[in-house]
Image (cartoon, rainbow, N blue to C red; front, side, top):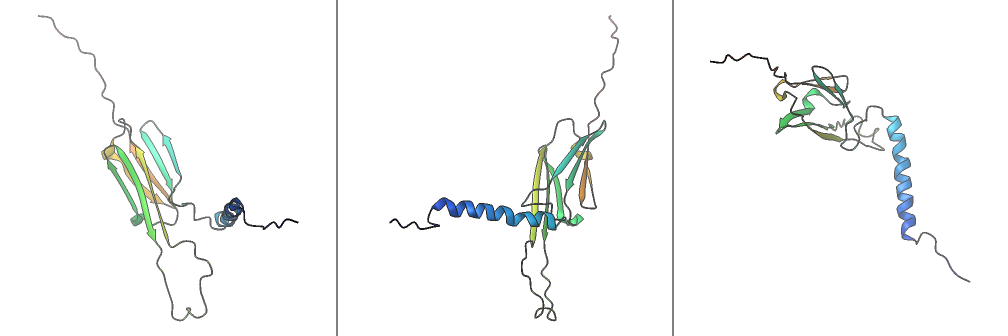
Length: 152
């Protein structure tokens, strides 16, 4: 008779951990709608108009002061960092404790290469209702005018 030990194969544990991690994260995605900035990634929409581009960064839960937007050598970088303040009340410390704390620090950083058609000096940004909107105006095209040259 052969004895077979269960749980001794190295891939069983890896696969089980992978499945457990996947399913343990799903409730978090649906439970907390304000947590759309996942592990350093903020979703972005880019629209083009006649006058320029509009870049929308979805980043709820941040304050205007948490953002940093800069342009360096034709690269637009948008980043944000938020540290969660730990508030401990002496009154509630005996009756209230965290069973699970999934956020205390959030940050992201996105970079975009700017086209030569974009006027970097004219970029402006507004943050409202969890969406950072950057307006990237196009440079005005130099219109070539026809000119008649007199022959002498």
